[in-house]
Length: 178
Image (cartoon, rainbow, N blue to C red; front, side):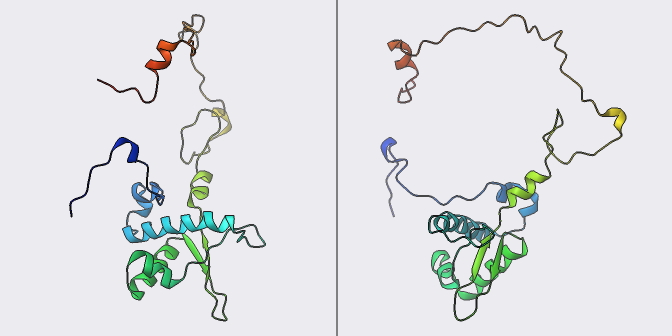
């Protein structure tokens, strides 16, 4: 096949599925298969649709319906592969399937793993991100900035006049670099 090149005006013509970068960068998800990561992205797409359709349980949690046949169709895979991917996402805690019985599809809750990560991050005072070790009361005060050498008295700022035509042309997003 011989495909054409993207032109400037065509660069944003497609709809995309979003897959969190954390799934590719975090060691915790290193052994999660690429197909399972893609399936999680498809689940995230379904979450936004479910929210619009008000598929929310009594506890305020959004759920999706994604049948095994839909997974097979979307990923072009067989029944066993689709089941394996769903079990893989469940084993990592990224989804939770609730059987409804009576030939109804499973109610699937897509888990938000970012909430778990944020609970481990310390954002108090001047500590760096990550799990902070709590130490004795003698070191309760954090180190402050040494403002005596920061020269905070002199601040050279220049006004930017956005209504100046030459500056507007210069900062135009369509300006071509030469």
